[in-house]
Length: 273
Image (cartoon, rainbow, N blue to C red; front, side, top):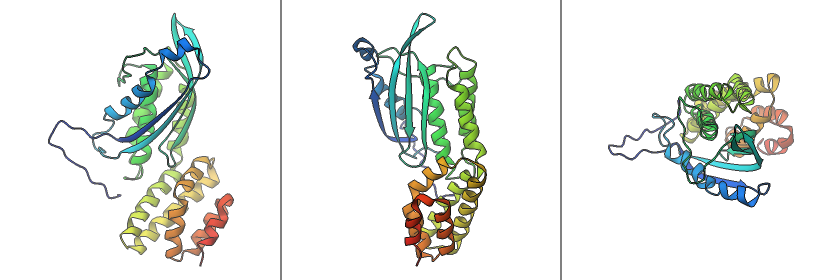
C-alpha cells in the first residue's frame, strides 16, 4: 500500500477529491442565443466536481482536472432542447478520456446535480468520469483500490443505457471494460508508485521488486491489449522512471522499456551507464 495520510477533521469542512479544475468551453458552433443558454456552464461544471465528496476514505487527493467541452450543436428531443458536445477530460498525467457523444439539456443559472438513484444526463455524465478518474488514482494507493469507484461508474452507465438519453452510454460501458480488464496496466501503475515510494525512502531492494512487477504488467499489456493508455502512463512518468532505474544500474529494465516504447528509446538508452 502506498503511503497515504487520512486527515480527520472535527468540523464541517469536507476536503474534496479534486483540486484545481480547469474548464474550457468551445461554443463556436452555437448561435448567439444558444451560447447565452450555456453561459454559466463553465463555472457550474467546476463547482460540480469541487463541491461533491466522491469517496469518504480518500478525502484529500486534490486531483487536478482539465476539461474541454466542444459544443457540436443543438437538437429537439421530446419537446426539449438538447445540446450535443464532445468532451476531453484528464488529470494532466496519464488518465485521459475523449468522449464524442455527450447529449444533455441545460437550464442556465441552475446547478448541475448528481443523484445516485435518478439519472440526469449532464450530472450523471460528469459523475461517471469523476468516479473513473478517481478509481484510476485509487488504484495507485491500494492493489485494485479503484474497484468500488469503477463499480459506481458502471451503475451510472446502466442507468444511462436504460434512460431517455442513451446516446454514448454503451461506448462508456465498453471503456470501463477496457480499463478494468487491463489488469497488466492496473498492476503496473500500482507497482510503479509503490516502487517510487520505496526508491525515495532509500530502499532500493524493495523498489526493484516493484519495478520488476511493473515491467511484468507492461509486458502483458503489449501482448494482449491496445497500448495507448500504457503509453500515456509512460509519457507521464518516463523521466522519473529512467532516472530511478539508471541510478540503480538497471540496464536490462531500461533496454526492455526501450524495446516496448520505441518512439522514446533514446531516452532509455541515455539512462544506461
